[in-house]
Length: 495
Image (cartoon, rainbow, N blue to C red; front, side, top):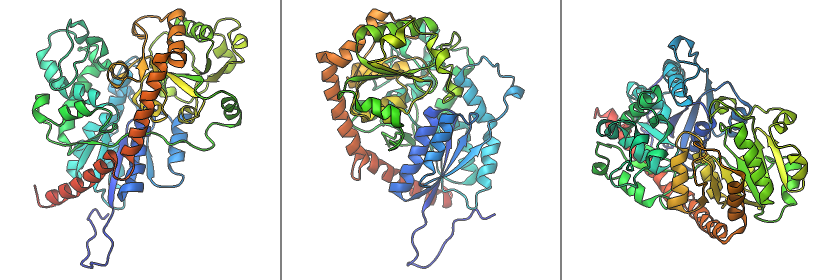
């Protein structure tokens, strides 16, 4: 098996393309940005790419994403079997974060074998946040390695500073009376910390701090934002001293990388319904690929939508009493419509049939948000959904549920200025129908909503400019490529 780079003395031979191996952990929030990064590297920056996907039991949505990425075939996609976690002693009730981290850890030997099975050694390894334990494979192969953080710069700043906070802060973060200081960055309110930081005795917290400590082992950090979105935070991130630790690698802004609109993605009936609605008149209600609500909150949301008298599309999912990320591993599995309607107020579907459309469990989100009739998005604020909303010029009502979504919501409301939010966190308290009605009418009808719509449309233009040739994200990926070549040369020289 040849792992050597081909060489030639002929100046007429075309330069060899760099071959990137990208690793995605389970879940749509990780899979989509990794695949889109791979496609961008191939289409615009002269790479070849192989994406290794750790399957989460091949849900419908994941299967569609993988199939669409292979038509036309820009990428090679290798699906790795999901490891059996029963031997690890991990509790079935453990958090999604800890379960995904364990799956990635157990899959390390599988990825190593898959890389070794390639015809030629890849030139660079790119992993997502949950893949930091795989960076050592890059060292074994003697290739540069990068970490792709597919969320905001503010979250990255908190993540990188968490080992320092771990040493300095006594007690639980959520019990602190003052915001958590991140040198050079906006402080983080205790209630906005990422889920793994909610319980410092938990397994997911230990994984979170470990990952933060492993990120600087890479040769660089790729971040799914663009320069104009978070200028000040990016400046702080790039100041090594400001983070109080050695960040010995550059930060490359490569976003917004989102799934492209598929021309036939909406389907005939959905497209016909949207086409009948006035411009910017429809509120899209969806809680991402994994989000679920308690039954009581579903009822209040239904009443709020009905009382607002605004048009809506609602991706309705079965309620859960266990966790707010209850559908994380079941994305795309559609529940029966009749069963779902049983959780709504009596007569809701009949009373709202002229203004509302309910879609069971899953919907083509990018295609819906890109339609001219969309005027607002009630969202869990996952970063994929956040970028999809901004790129399509749609303001948001924030409804954070888990992961880093509370921090994303605060960023959207207080810094970027394209969203409004309930008075209390939905993850802490049931939001009542009257407040939901007011939020919906504000974003869809009031002056405040119109101002946000104008702001988000400016950001849409900024994002488009960043991704085109000469734009900041395009040039940042070009810079990453040149730095990667230089690092390959240094490794060959033994540095």
